Image 1 (cartoon, rainbow, N blue to C red):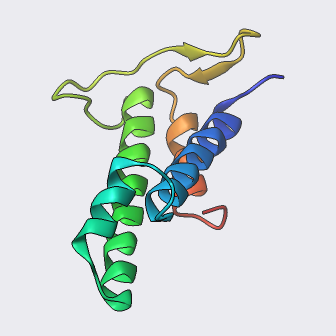
Image 2 (image 1 turned 180 degrees about the vertical axis):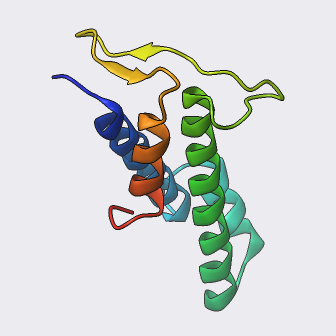
Length: 111
């Protein structure tokens, strides 16, 4: 299976979604789920906390994808990285395609 920038961004989004699901599931077994349960939040508070976690995950993954494409810094250093799939297809090389795919996947009509 080949994976270009759009497929890579979508795979990252799927991981973000899976993490959010695990965090929100009281029986998920994650440290986040355990801490949410221990906080003994009201239903409304829980919804708000999960919305904040949702936003934080989106921003973190989006920023990481942008950093790979060179449009954001990673640890204080901004540079483009070359990222290729197993079949040699270019996922990121600083040309903005991964950044564009990430924006569409996380914040555009695909998000």
